Image (spheres, protein in one colour):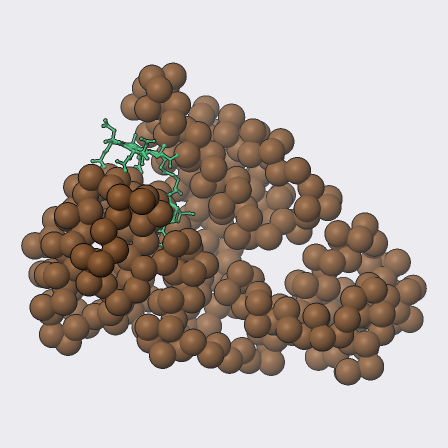
Amino acid sequence: MNPNQNIEPLRSRYLNAILSGNRSDAVKIIFSSLKRGIDIYKIYIDIISESQSIIGEMWHKGIINIAEEHLATVTTLEVMDALRSNNLNNRKLIGFKAVVAPVEKDEHMVGSRMMSDFLIMDGWDVDFLGSATPVKDLVEFIKNKPVDLVVLSLTNIEYQSNAIIMIESLIGILPRPKILLGGLAVKNPKIKIKDMKCDSIALDILEGIKEARRLMGLSKVRLSLEEHLLVIGKQIRSIRITKQLTQKDLSKASGLDRTYISAVEQGKQNMTFGAIVKISDALDINVDDLITSVNKNNLLDIN
Ligand code: B12
């Protein structure tokens, strides 16, 4: 399958699966999309997140009731469990602790759970607190354990005063954790950015992960050799599939053995520079683009 293909049919199948609470179908749709080369971030955002928004809108419009909405949401959370577990194998722990919580009274929790999963896949130790934690309890919770970063999610703009109070209370904790804010409401024109005394505000999950790292002084991400090889291998596989080439085609065009290509794509082959040039030529891309893809993709291709 071409990774750039129209994602709509997959989303529609996924939506039907979660609406009927069919966990096994939902997991199958997501994992087969992953296998076919669809980027994991695209899966989270364009399939899972979009479907959850559609489900929520159906509830808001009275098309489904709260029980049906809950069934779909719980099914999605189970799919996210499976997806996250599948992506932990090659993760390198970065040694920082984060607490992720929606602001007080905000019961929208799927977005913050996604942010939490991405942090875990990025190597963070994360406590995810589910929905609507009261300020007092959050502060007590954090006082009792050293936390490097508190990630707050604000979905409903009506609760922005709760976000402000929460941030001000967290600022008083010693040692003071860094505070990052995100969520649907931060894009709302009614948001009072200047009243939010947090350390950073991120508009989406990828920016959130980058900001989280930057706040810890990790803006320059250095990858190990294994991680470089994994990212380059995934990039080669993705470009090969986009160009509708088989491994055999790429082997023939590059003059490299098919088993070598297979090992490269799995990140198991420490390529010579000559092999990188041959593969780039065969894929009709610049060597530079292949190498710099490492910097662009290390946060996307967390697995
Ligand atoms: C699903 C949903 C619900 C579900 C929530 C289920 C659950 N357990 O989470 C239910 C049915 C419970 C619900 C209830 C309500 N909802 Co509602 N809901 C939605 C809906 C349709 C989708 C939200 C969602 O889950 N999206 C999927 C997730 C994955 O996306 P997301 O939350 O945006 O998160 C993404 C990003 O924002 C980001 N992100 C999230 N958090 C963070 C944090 C950081 C740090 C970073 C970097 C990124 C990040 O990452 C995610 C992936 O991209 C939205 C409208 C919409 N289309 O978005 C309305 C919406 C948020 N709800 C709304 C409202 C008004 C309500 C109710 C007040 C309705 C009512 N009358 O009771 C209640 C409030 C309950 C409460 N106390 O909070 C309004 C809010 C409007 C506003 N004032 O801001 C919206 C916008 C609908 C609308 N168009 O009016 N809702």
